[in-house]
Image (cartoon, rainbow, N blue to C red; front, side):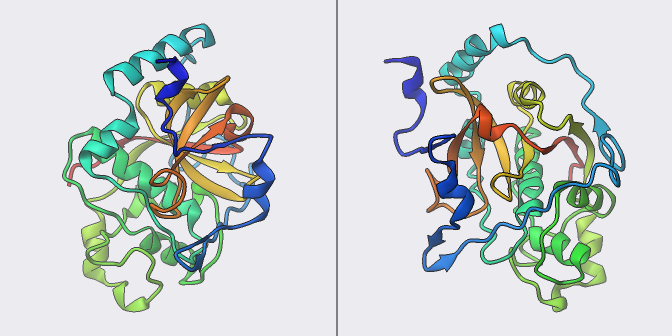
Length: 268
């Protein structure tokens, strides 16, 4: 078995050869046209390391170690995707909302909670998107999301349904519950740094990556080798997209314009 065969045959690879298909056309899944909604981060307004996120401050793992590390993670099934599958953590589905920029950080939180062996609780991205955008179905970027997640938390889906923009869910009791679901530490990665992104993934830290070419934000999950280094992502377009929500982005397409990595979640 070749090393590259660890990629599931149903996983498609998005690279320079086919990216326009994904950049220019939102898919229709189960009769529903999927939305994106990423806005470019204004680094003048929110410089690197501002707000609730600290600048990434670790040495990056040298590239000459990457293939060996990837092989070991594959062999031992110790990737974040393996943990998510064991925990039963499925991908998000943003429906027809423009809330990719909050779904990706929310999924990061769920993954970190699984890493910390906390109870599986699905979290409502819409609860934070509605609060930030005053219940408008509008785009944003990850920095907005993590500042809110860090300060106020996020409401579980059991209280606020995943894609609901209804004000009736916005109660004092809901946000009291949300305090139990906060991220207390984030790294703000240097824009266009694939090495920082891969270092986080080798450390089993998920990363919410904003991709201007796609106008979309997704969760980077695993380091991958496929005719070159790449990243396995989990999208927020439901289980029928890709391989149960997973796909592969080549280095050129996975190199983020904005990237945030959660490190610690409050234990509810």
